[in-house]
Amino acid sequence: MPDTNDAVRATGRRKEASASVWLRPGQGKVTINGRDIEDYFPREVHRISVRQPLVAVEKVGDFDIKASVKGGGETGQAGAIRHGIARALVEFDPDMRPVVKKAGFLTRDARCKERKKYGQPGARKRFQYSKR
Image (cartoon, rainbow, N blue to C red; front, side):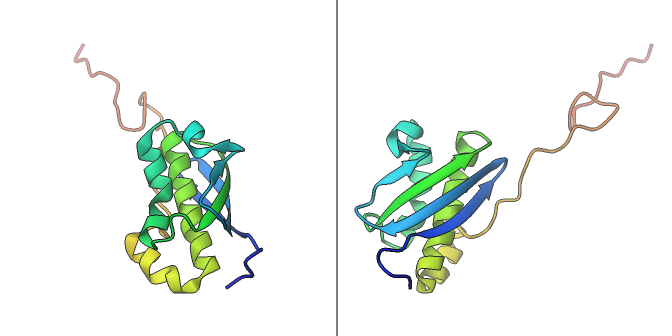
């Protein structure tokens, strides 16, 4: 377990988004790209998603989180931050690993956009068939 003054850094990814997360003991302040979480994520769903690993280990107000995220959309960025927080918690205290792992927060969600194929307008859509 690191010293109380040390910040733990971890990286989280989802879809096209990549997040660097710094976790340090504090009052529970969450800052994303220099903005407060309420300003950065207007939708409650994304704020809940970001805080899920802390809820799982019952440490909601115990850490200050600073995240730098780029790429992707809102949902991808929220997922990337969640992944980074989960990894940082495990690095901070390895005893939290079973709880976080069972909740599925350490697993990288590998789903991403399927590539467009030649001879058709999209990944799966086909050009309209005409007999004549």
